[in-house]
Length: 419
Image 1 (cartoon, rainbow, N blue to C red):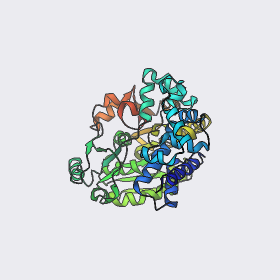
Image 2 (cartoon, rainbow, N blue to C red):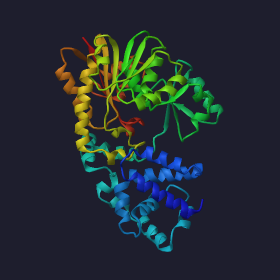
Image 3 (cartoon, rainbow, N blue to C red):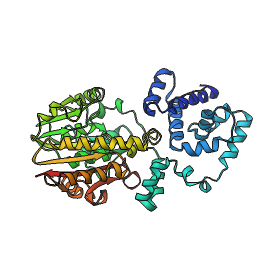
Image 4 (tube, rainbow, N blue to C red):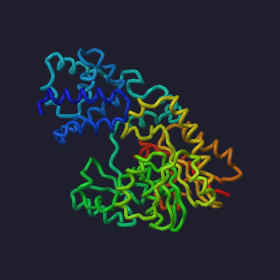
């Protein structure tokens, strides 16, 4: 493709993404469907340039003010992730001179907001919470996440799957904490590998795997994944149950549950029952009250723990949206807790970095339901699930995962046992 044409496509894609009307990954996917003639290298350049802008939007917008022409084009030029010579061939002489000038700017001397590239409503609580670790977190959020895989223990062992990847010239290293996990750098074509096609592995961040391990679902139990989504944790729970018992996958979205079906077919599980519910007070939930052994509530949240993968989330979320989510999280947790039988385990989790969605919700639930539920230290529960170095994964009684500390997405979890 001619350099000018690729630069124009990148500008067009960024313009669509920056409307922030839909998640960036869905906009990028739709764009590629419209331009099926694009090669792998061209797709990589377009996607990675777009995500680079989203990660450092405030900085690039500041630098772009000195340029001329369409703003999205200037942002693309500043964030370009393709061949540098290819970019120069698409630029006019004034554009090349401008790019040299802004590239020489000492970025370390710029104001903090242009260095951390976070909205202030998000930067402030994170800085307060993390102190000196704030900047290491910022650095970690500007690096693309690796590809984490969960070995389906119903079908394979981790060392066997690792050997299969090695035979395909793909380095897959055991994850440091999860006994189920493998970590792969880059983006290999998984769907073409036998280990994926036959269901020996599933894509799942190590932090998400730890939530399933924390739930500790066992053979022949009645288990509920209350906000199942596309079912990543559902599949992990089903494998830990050794395909016995009964595992309900609840979600309000039929579209998300439909995405579970092909994954379920690959997994070999037959103990999973996907159920679309209207809301957390659905009659189908009430009929199971007091009958369930384990409930995992991976609640709807801001998703700010996934900024390595979804940098647009920091621009699409707001304090008002988080306040609405908090009400929903508290309601869902209270409703899900009624499912448990005495001795049953309840896990509340989010992929958020904010105390407001994490500790604050868990502590409020504990205060309101202290007579019914006993808190379980997450480190103890993780140790019993054979997780490596569990004490390094917690803050107080709670699981607390951070990209800069643990190389996972940001996750939180609290655990209780019903009396």
